[in-house]
Length: 389
Image 1: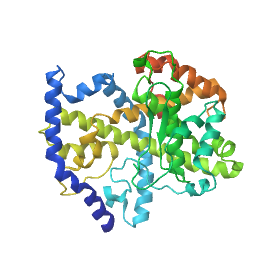
Image 2: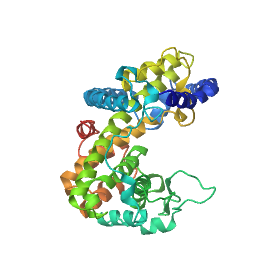
Image 3: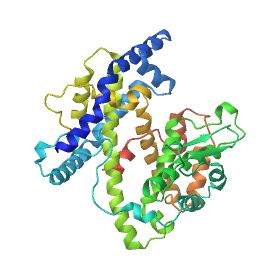
Image 4: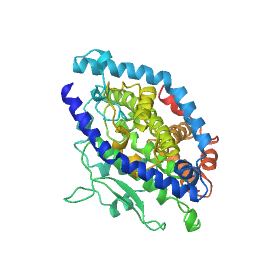
């Protein structure tokens, strides 16, 4: 416990060094927003991103209510595991007892060594099999892409549509493990969205309808690699082994979704308050939100700007809601694919549905109209809540 406490506290120290600079950024962003007629930068960012603030807050309130019971049960289970791991009482657990320093993803929860499953096959071969099964061609994308690590290379991963004329490529640093197989499938989800946009659309409309719709497809594709149909049909595992892995992976995926949702509520509500009043007690507000939504205990006597240690608050402001909305749309699309094509993996009908309903329309509709047109109903968080119950 003492060792992880020191590591956790070290990870927060940057917050004290940059907090006043971040407050000043908030003041400057607010001033620019007000010159354009907005209340503050939070409202401006949502409006320019085609998000209605009141409806977003209502949606997140419903999402919080719908997932509260499931998250409470999950947190109790995690707390029991963490207390046993550290040999402390559950009542003694503190934020540093959870591996992720912001508790935005699930801790290890037992199960299978997933990385060992991917040691024999190059990730590009597995990705080609996956997308071939959907009738979506990715070989041309992979041929243009920068796939493997080398000295001095960007260590991140992303997809780019360079000209809106079909020059789509990705950057990766592939290894034969779970993370990079997931990542490649994810980035190719972005890539096929761009590739299969209707080329006859005007240039300004030849793009996804919104960040959250392309993110939804990428999330959907990145999640296939531990589903039973993929483990048997693409990776070639036997049924009993695939059952065991899929069960363990499904448990982890549900946990990640619930934990990330509560974290996203903290981030979104904190940023709303930050831009409402950059001079307020942000340190105290941060921990009020963490305690309420993540059920983490505030360290006694701890009074520091831990919020400023989170990269996005300073340099990717008012963006986190798109991650959560992407997850909601992904689960709604997944529901439709089960209804329309019987699932995703190995279903050419699913690939055709994605092309016709998601990719081809481009930005001819705003994201809400696009989701409603594609799935037959407006964005509905019930599918996410049901998948993570």
